[in-house]
Length: 333
Image 1 (tube, one colour):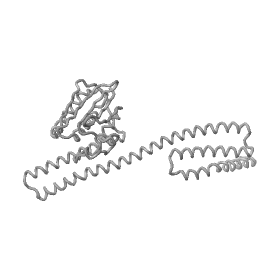
Image 2 (cartoon, one colour):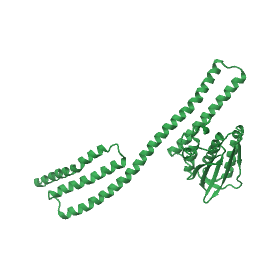
Image 3 (cartoon, helix red, strand yellow):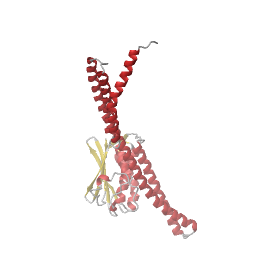
């Protein structure tokens, strides 16, 4: 193939001139990016995109200065490149915002996981230590009278049930946080579901001297997944029973409001501190000492309630009422 030496010289000159022009923008941009490496992702992406556009413009202007581009073509290029660059910068800003939100969410998720692991480790360590001590006492014959042996067996079973409940809560929370929770939505008779939940919680409430009352006669139907909705009601009742003193009352009510059905669980726990109200649905949050008895759970029950309600497209809220607090759940009818 015959090559034109003049054309080759022109191509080499164009490459060198364009490279020199681009370096005028790239070198300061690279130095700026190095200084911004600890700043926000959005800012770094914007600087990178702007640097790319300026490098292209600098290369074009350098080549134009060497008379390789006509005035008409230069005007066209100077219109097209800034316009395309503006769109590129706008897209980079949008992508940077999304990446920043994703990074913040991931960091929050890691912090939440570390917090949960710390809390659960503490909650598992205590009953495990007690069970080990009782098992060793039984094995070594330290206790032998039937009454004490029976009491040790009862306490070991109680602690086993408590740990199993905690593991169930962790599994449910992991399904919610990982996005693997799949709901099978149907029309659910809220009254029947609440009635079953109250009946299941009645023995525990009676053992603590707490009265369960459901005053609603006409319950609405809601669009929900029955197993998850049962878990919501059960967790709210368990939370209320746990923090309501003896001779206290828990009232379950419900109804319809616009296009939503709602249920509420009100107790006589004495109320929640105003500073704690916004945090009661946080993972592993247990509140002040008045609401943290020794037999309390892992602080996951209300977090599961919020996750399941959100998955249904509903809302959950808490407020202090006379002598206690009231948890309200709204779901689509």
